[in-house]
Image 1: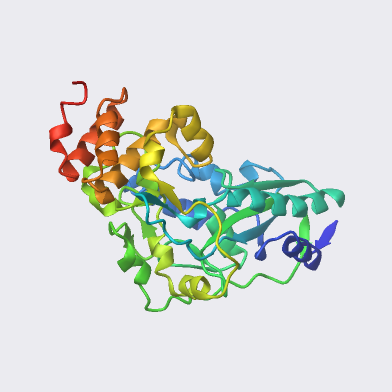
Image 2 (image 1 turned 90 degrees about the vertical axis):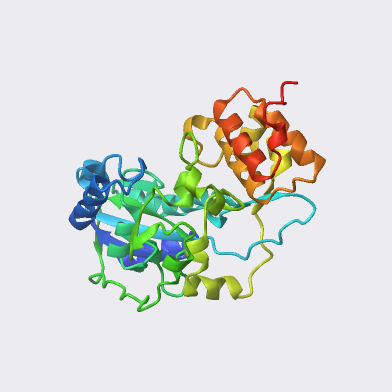
Length: 349
């Protein structure tokens, strides 16, 4: 039975999606080629998401054998950044991590899926999963164009969105989707804004240099990018912040900002494992290891901490004596960066 597109679009927008589009469920052959080529060049930097099994994520039928359509939706998370506290050292959190935006996206997509099921169709929701290349699906569905940052830019909204889709066996009656024309033109502000030059060509990101990915990587943080990390504790928004369509949105009147944009570093480094994970465990953390968060916090402290503050010296000294080798090594880097070298080797005294 054919489903009318206007029913699906109306349902999705009423459920809270800021944009809804329709795409066929044919293989994403061009995306598969790009992923395999970039992986061969090492640009994936060890990322498993999307790269783990490109043939599955680019072939909807690998997940649903009778898939016919993809209803692609977006949830907007653009909002002004809350004022930074001035009474303590704080680490910056990328805006896409202030809340679990994917929870709202899944809920909205589930309403669309439920409507399709009520009409007798199979429907599965995918968001932030390895089953589908969400940006490629959004592009095919006519939600937006590929930005030079590799993000999808939705006209009038920008790139500060999370994307997901409903995969269904329904045949949807709709006019053929028109691709959104590129609107970046000669602008390359996102490329210039990247603090580590991770955007190696328009639309191509070298994950080995991308701070967002490196902050989620297991083990030691690359020495050559530690100073460039600055105050970033989790994620990096720089390429999106520099994008003119996003700047227009962020300057526009908006409700009072909410969410955790800043995290007190000294306090964070004093938390036990259970408390640390209960507060920040919604983030992607390798092996669910709280010491990765401590590693990131020590890098921020080394970059922007106040070496004259006795509390800073106390925290660094404690980290130098930590049971984790990763924590100890990054505490040593922070001590040297802050001019607190005299603490190294004295922590057990």
